[in-house]
Amino acid sequence: MKTIDILICTLNKGIVRVSDILMPPREEIHYIVSFQYTDDRYLDLVPPVLKERADVSFYTLNGQGLSCNRNNALEKATSDLVMFADDDTRLLPDAYEQIVHTFDANDIDVAFFQATTYTGKPLKEYPDAPFTYDRRTTLTYSISAIEMVCRRKAIQGVIRFDERFGLGTQFLTCGEEEIWLEDALRAGLRMKYFPARTVETSTMLKKKMVYVDAGVQRSRGAMTYYRMGNRAWLACAKFAIQSSINGLCHFWPMMHHLAEGIRYMKRTK
Image 1 (cartoon, one colour):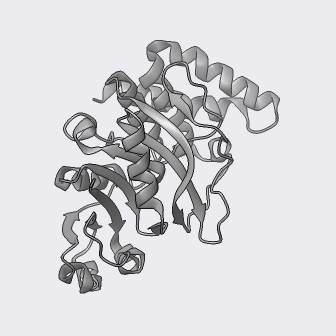
Image 2: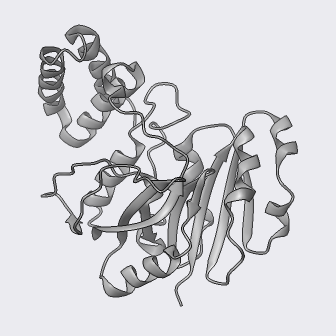
């Protein structure tokens, strides 16, 4: 019987939603709640059930930054498998059985599944067939942390979310999942996608933000540099030129922000 730790990360007022996403207790599933707060007044909002249920471990973390929060939750994990969740992410009723069967039937470290909205609509345009994720893979969609399930021992102490990236940071406001995947490839983890739904969420994805948001543009430049080194300059220039030709943005503002991301990565660790 495999056990799963569901790592729930939330910030400030989001803590009030966490009790609504807990399933009825079952022996195989444990919840680790990492609650970030920026002011002590948010501590008064913690639902009592989070400290009362035996299947919930509750931790507080002063500050903000989703990557830091996920790292904190992962450090507390002890189960066979771990999956990342937000404060609006619910496990589907048959997800546990689906996840365990997948890991029993495949020699993998990380599995990618599908997520839906609360109305049952797929969160993205997912591939229809399973595939192995490696250096040869060209993705037609972006992988989100809530879609991942990992063998704990394969990632704990091996891979962390890069805390320079992600929601709650001031400069590189996204990209933490892409950097995590790059680190997973460098670590040689065995990863595979499966067209099965495991979670539902209220989150709706914001498309094409890279053409209008400076933080997303800086993140793209930083991610490109992380993967390609100094070749990122040419890759980013090509992206900015093509985006401008397609009428999606102006070249110079886009290139300026892409370059800011590259320079930031060059001077930080």
